[in-house]
Length: 253
Image (cartoon, rainbow, N blue to C red; front, side, top):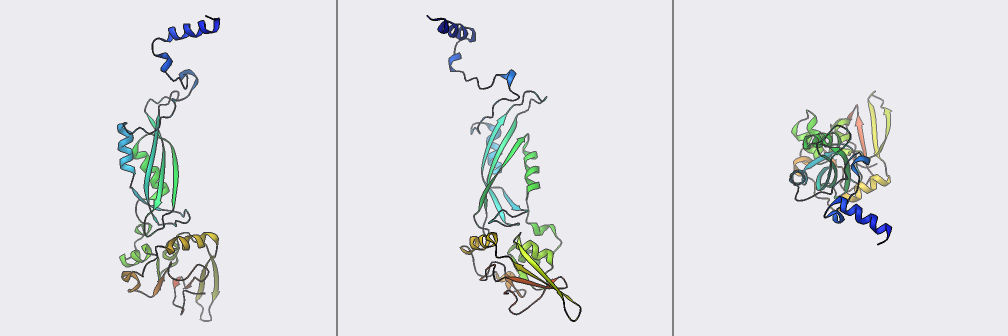
């Protein structure tokens, strides 16, 4: 037996039986934490968290093109990894989480993912998600009549709406503003939707699922659905003293 093999044999004897099957990824004295472990379907916490997360519904606070602000999104997949810190005074298990989201109809099926580092509890995870997304439609944060909230939800722009309502309907679409004072002293403001790549992408993504106007909204007020027959290059919205005004045919430039 050579000197090298004799040294290996002595090490194996010192480690004891089964040492050859052990995988020593990080010597504890040299690593601040144990290696992350992939989500384990047999782990009770991972299983409960995943079941609670997948299918959960949120609403975007800001656009993620082609998805717009206030589009509904659902968690379609959750990957959960856990580890135990060594040197920060904690012994509780911590988690690294990746979540996949997809748009919920009538929004397009755009998808994206986010990564959340160092999560300790499910409540902490939901608090962090609530800062990024809304658990309820954004129009529910306003004291608007139910009819107005339905119009905002279906992105129907009605005569008499104010700029806050219309801004929420646009959901982050880019537009340029033109202002002028009329002869009678009233202020006219025109929002022209930018014919940008992102605007075209948002309109194109919704064309496949475009449906007839909702009678609950279009039958109650003069106006138009944002994603109706007109494209972004044709759309403009006219305000008089801060309220949407009719201008036949006021949905076109």
